[in-house]
Image (cartoon, rainbow, N blue to C red; front, side, top):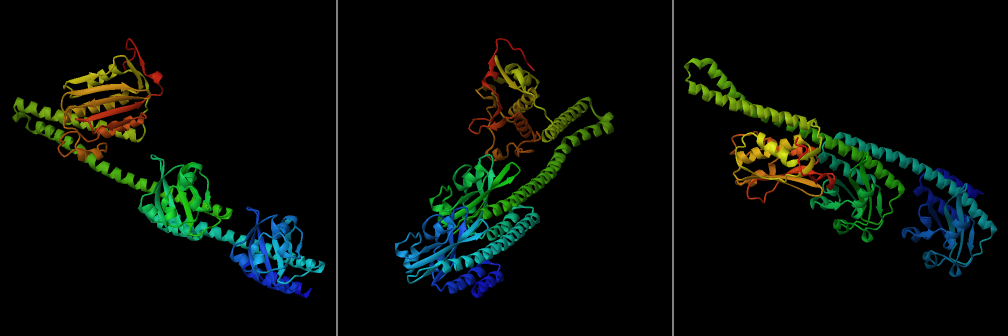
Length: 560
């Protein structure tokens, strides 16, 4: 009883397993007068007993021995929840080969129970044959009962401490996320913290490229090559691709024998990985993953902790992106105002100069001079009107104030009207549009885009100019092609940018193509340039909901 009291005192004196178990095992070995003593704790998820601490048989812990519940000596103790005595280990069913290697001849094991829960197994062994009697069994079970209570208390303390640490870790991530508004500043702070929190060797973020449906390596620590080499992983493929596709955590216990699309992971010697999706609401932003250079069993607690961290990281990324977009919009707005003011100033100055001259020198001017001034004023006024109309178009498109209403149209009739009404189109235009082709499209979009293309062809191209149309199963294509020099190669990358003009262009605002493409995209289609054509060639592409919408008629029934 004194020895049991000493065991109880030891159990009460320690709240941490690493300090508790060595003391308990030494005193248990002394109480039973044995050579070895070990504790195996139950891994409930794997249904296995894991060697946690030992004296006299330390190899059991060093080698990470795991015994399935129900198998061998310790497995039977846990499964039956009853003491088991092995009088002769050499001729008994033992799943752990270390027991025979150490020369243990006899063993006694008891379950560690708290209420109806099995925590594990406590077993002792002798290097000489020994008959463990009922008193030995009762004594070890009493010791086991006290050890079980102490282990349960230590686990509760550890769980509470881990919970507190988890909250502290999440708060640290939150603080870092709130402290930075730009991704380039955010990731170098976040990733090392995440790696330390998960006690991993590597940590990386891959962000989703929605157009390509690929994950792009954006930042990494411990596996920087992933970013340096511009790794791209198709969604659904490999480790990170599965995380993004399923929007669920994925654990790789053994990278060497897993499906990974990124060869750098194996090249760096990563053995185990855990990845979670970066989600904001229903939107997937990418994947956050950590890895270790030694095999590791990521627990449910690890998964939950990384998910909590990922939630904060995702919000931080979204916040940083919104900040970057706002900065870009501010820059665009400032540039737009500056350029628009400059563009408006030229025709406005011209009109003002004409009116000022007419007002102050009208009596001194000849009829011919007066007419010439009026023509200059009208030309400047027309340019000013056109620019203001284009700016109004941009404003409506940016505010999504254009209401696209597709309806059946006889295409040849509509395009004919657009050609007739287009300004400065005295040039000859070859018309290659089937008379009986009916499409579903918005009249305003066709007008804005096609008239712009025709105007550019006349202004910057050369005859002959061809306006053609063809309808496929799912799309309508309207093409305007001229026979001029085409678009200069250095102009092509910024062809559809606002205020983009060649140095030689002395007319036009540089807004037309930008507006035309925006109208096309508002219709669900696009405006594209064909660089392979001999002259300038642009095509308006508009989707058609079904082949039934492209029909032939004997007489046009709708023209506008």
